[in-house]
Amino acid sequence: MSTTSGSPAPHSSRRKMGLWGATSIAVGTMIGASIFSVFGLGARIAGHNLPLVFVLSGVLALLVAYSYATLGAKIVSNAGPMEFVLRGIGDGLLTGTLSILTWFTYVVSIALFAKGFAGYFLPLVGLATTSLHHALVEAGVIALFTAVGILGSGAVGRAEFAIVLVKLAVLGVFIVLGVWTIHPTWIEPTLGGGHTRCTLDAMAVFFLSYMGFGLVTNASEDMEHPERNVPRAIYLSIGIVTAVYVLVAVVAVGNLQLDALDKAAEYALAEAAKPFLGNAGYLLVSLGALFSISSALNATLFGGANIAYALAREGQLPKGFERKLWFGASEGLYLTAGIGVALALLLDLSGIASITSAVFMAIYVFVLIAHLRLADQYGGSRMIVWIALITVIAVFALLLVYQWRTNRGAFYGTWIAFGTAFLVEVVYRRATNRTLRLRRHGPAATHHR
Image 1 (cartoon, rainbow, N blue to C red):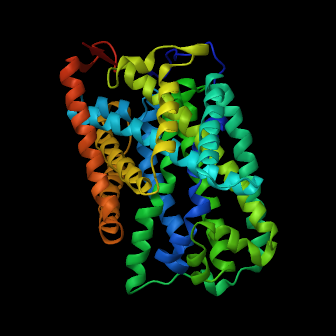
Image 2: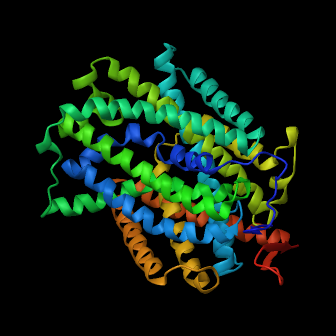
Image 3: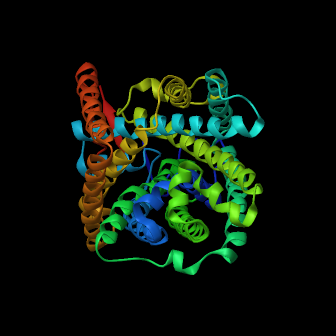
């Protein structure tokens, strides 16, 4: 059951995270593995406009974040966006389907981060990139951050804050040393003709690098003074991430020609560091990647476990997810980590990243719709929400068109994910006969079987 601001939140026996711990959760997720692997793709799509793309994507993220911040300050629940949807749209197959999709995106992200960590870690320590070594590292890193999650939200927040500081320091070195050697003409935006369409395509793809800000609402019950700190952490995280993205893009595009960035693909930042760091650039970027992936994995595992527990508590996932097991941690933590390990070991997840992004975009749409319905009760400017909703729908359509043009498998996979979650919800709802309703004396949700 969720709580409203001012009421006692659950898990009060454990030390809660403060503003900077919550901000670090979001920053750690957003500045994850993608910043070290997407710049080759970005150069291919947007060219010299890549820094501009991150500015536009940051503005769009702020539009969506307005609803998360406004509702999150009043609705304190680790179910986060799904609590907003439940209150604004009500119980039904749609809400249940979105619940399943929301949790599953965290599980898939955990598997992706684990595989990315192994990919950087093995060469750095001189181990052969065999299937066995990959499996051991992937399972080991997930187990490590599961142990951190068992220690509670305070430990997660402190670990995330420390990791994010190291990661930002590494990127800071990259920016500070690289900014002096950029070629100004290489970062001048080019508009008109096909460049505008390419810029919009890139914005549709790279807006998804900001999707971690929603994790703040998934930790609101574990935060000190969530009515103040949820909005602050959301806006702070987006501001920090936008500044980092833009500056890294300026240094990368300004130091290496576009064809070289494109050719370097997932090692584009390492290549971009060579003009001013030489071979030390490889070590710098590799260490930065490991810290980035670690913080993203830590934050995503924590958020996935929180949302699994909260959704199970409200009947939107099986009750097993909220049971307490070893060391007082919820079964949701162990199930989220365990399934993440299984996916990392059994599947090639490279094509699923785009599908996960599309699912998050769909969730944003319904959160915005919910906010429109809840504006009278919880506040917020309907004009801002309408602008955000129309813009997100347009960007979502752009993403689908981009998938269709460049990766038909991702396009079909997106709709298969939606359809599968819907079928699972239909079967689960019929098997349990459960419904959800709002309590008569408060907006918190409860469930009946």
